[in-house]
Length: 630
Image (tube, rainbow, N blue to C red):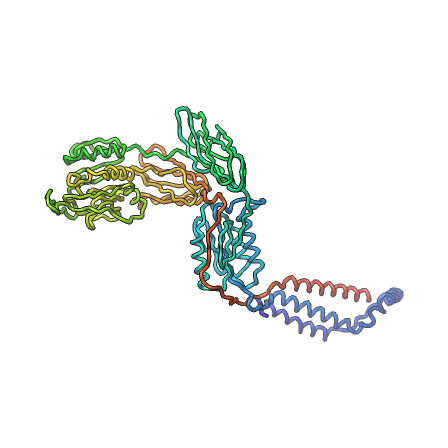
């Protein structure tokens, strides 16, 4: 036995003090009482107390000593060691969207937390508790906690998210713990029907039926709007009512404009279509009107697809072959293009364009708050371009086996900008007769010769999007192959992006937010009201992980604009979280060992209090009787 607070045993010094007091105290007291009262008491108590009359002082002393000893032990809090009884317990807790399903008045996640708390309560003191939470990411929320109250408090404050879970990732973390301690117990707490080996599965699902709405779209017509999609009932045949509502302005209540009855067979998606005459609206809401176990996947909100800003381009041409590039920008980039000479550009100080193309000419100072294209610049750079000119290569002849430099497309880029720039390229063979060697830091290479980039894109020193062509189109075959128009379209989408590319996502998706030309700041506000200011200085595309369900607001402050650009995107419950999941096969590698550590038993407080109360009660009765005898 050991003690939490050994200093509490100092209270035992009261025992010798009580004995000393008992030895030196006066044994007799003199009292004057009426004889009739004395005889009445003696008739009542004398026979009863006579056998122990000589022990009255000793009993009092013993009771006092016991009271002092028990009080000291209570303060010191004794602990009894129980050999080989403690466990190292790990919980892998599913925090995905399906855990918000309500069954018998409780969510599955609440039921999961209750099961974890019960296991902690039943475990022997001295055990350790760790929890791996699988939500929008896999996180170890606490590790090696020995205090039961602390572990239970940490569990009780958890909330389930709205994304899909990544159980293989969580199992990888659990495997690391298991490799370090083969005696540990790993509980997998989830609502999916996983097949497990040496894991302990705690299934908190109860089989309630859930319905969901999926594949929703809408389109405007001359007379109104048409909404369509699918509904699914996962566990039973049901008849559902699907409704379409619209909101005219931001924050306005939705007005129901159409409904339709849909007969759903278990597990089979059923199509629906709704038609309504609506003049103006900002968003469309499609929903199943009946409530079920998970109402969050019964509705979807659709906003207008984000539109690209007006594409107004100034083309400063200093070569004879600029016409082909102008036409490609007009057609593939869907833009208004004004063409001027370098002299006209310098004399008129033309401004107000969203993009400037300098073909065969580079100004001393680049315009700000606009996209820039530098095509075959003479010296390779203007002030603020971020491009360093090194030298021109020697031009090749138009005949012979080595008459052209063979170009290669860049491979393996993972950034969002690279994916946009190379989207849908056929990658035909491209050759150039000569090109300029540039040094470019922080630019994404699209096309290169050896290690030299000849088409690249990135941010210049003014933090504006910039595209660099290190050759003249007339010195290559690029303009004659189908990749040219695809590439121009990609470059225009990069130079003139919409703030967001889509308005409908699944929870857990990444929303790409484009830093449009002239953007001074971009703020993303989540459905819960959390605002995040994006880094628009060092990035041309910012990534936002959508972890909450509902409407996100994207507010972009554009230089020179009369008002902020406000766009909306909706994050819905992933379809995989709506239905019944069979789960995966999850097994920890390695043979289990049984080498447990020592536990302890310390729940003695109530026991000691009970003994103390009994002793004090007995002492009180005894003292009362002694008082009555006097």
